[in-house]
Length: 196
Image (cartoon, rainbow, N blue to C red; front, side, top):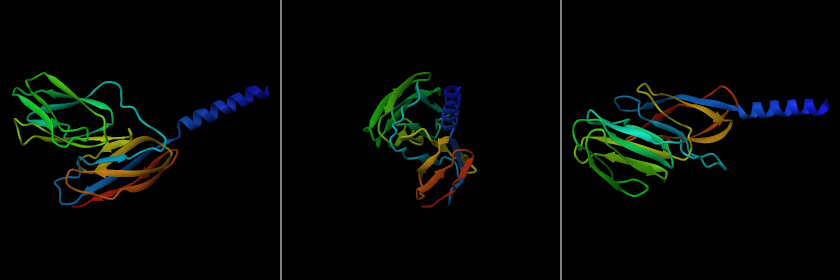
């Protein structure tokens, strides 16, 4: 009987420890901007862990002469498919990708071309057919990230309990990283104010 009780206790501990994760929730305020959206909030790294990208490809669309989404965080190693959903020709290139600048060429509606982001960092995504089009792919080392809405709200769900460095990225404003201690359950509040 003792070994059964021990097995039950061990199973319970494994169950509890596997569910020890909380959420990071907060608000960002972007000074002198139209709104507080499109800020990427992310955990820079988790000691001793390397994360694989999600299976399958992610998609950035070109629709109504815009890249959708405008800001796109992905885990390092993610392949992004660039789709043209417009009736006009579009191009995709990046002059500053950490993997090396690239130009995928120009293509018509319904066609996709792909690129894999193997290094962490920011890639500006442009279209040489329509110079007003611009977007950003933010390749990060962990899957613990979020993008703020226009009101500045964000939430990063299911973060394992522990201490982390929380960083933010915005195309025009900056804020210092914050140290955060995530509890095993519930929410940890972290707010940011971004300035020039």
